[in-house]
Length: 97
Image 1 (cartoon, helix red, strand yellow):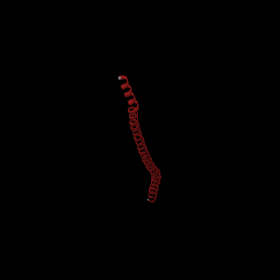
Image 2 (tube, helix red, strand yellow):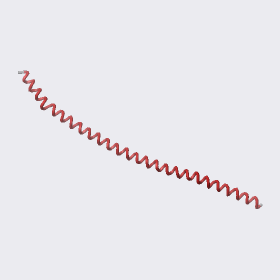
Image 3 (cartoon, rainbow, N blue to C red):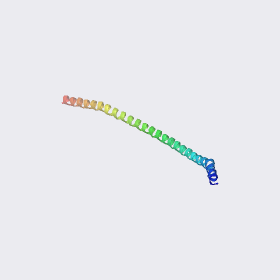
Image 4 (cartoon, rainbow, N blue to C red):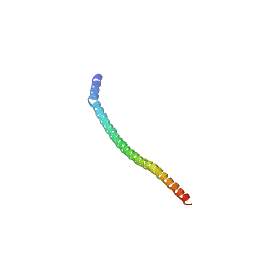
């Protein structure tokens, strides 16, 4: 008689408990998987946005660098021209005396 009761318990366990546990576990796993996919999507969006911000920042820095280079080279030429003008003015003053 005890073996019949054990057999019934095993059958109940196999037919009811295991499918319920597998179903609940599967549902939990699917929710966790959707959460991870959502988190990965948010991270990808955030990373893309930061990359775009960094690219824009680098572009602004490159533009400023080009302006500074132009100022340095143009001002150097202007400065040289101003020095030459001053030399010419000094020569004119000396010859006028």
